[in-house]
Image (cartoon, rainbow, N blue to C red; front, side, top):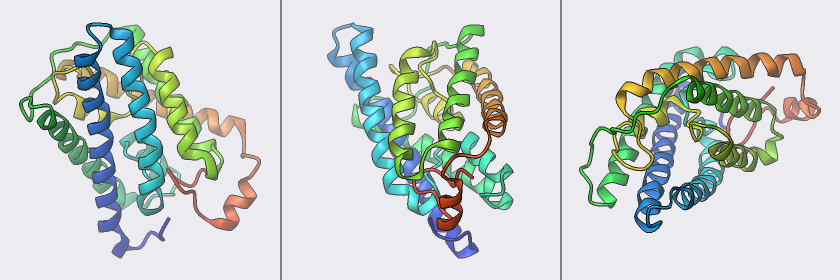
Length: 239
């Protein structure tokens, strides 16, 4: 990933916005397609949604990782800023780019399937089980981001999210930008606006827990090699 110079910021923000937009288009668009083709079978629809998301994540992290770190997620960006791996002054621009991208991705998915370009979701998602699930999903995601070997981060992040679609009650949003974007599509992947604050709070708690567990687990085995290369293609340098 390129050095953190002021000249690099616009390019990084473009990568974060574009990557987040494409991620939300994949998640929402595949959900709409899956629901239309699954003849009411929610399990088949979720499986199709999962496979598309896993594939999309691998491609997007590999594509945009060398440019911006491929966070696509305010929780990841906040942790990287706290660890001083993202300049503190860049955190809010990163988050703004991610939120704008999420909104654009939702609009794109809706438009492709000839739905209203932006229409608020009505699917309520909440309660203790789902909030716990979001904390678990986000905690696990941060552990993968912080501890994955550099050469395998894209595959491991995608594999974890794919698994978490099925072992968490919330289907693993694990991303405040995703919750915000999915709020704008009344479709299979949607979430009602009233449910978003609870999800975001749970994600924040999960991110903090992920950082704590990472510190308790200690340095990764290949930390020395990462210090020599100085970068982590895909998501961020996990030192």
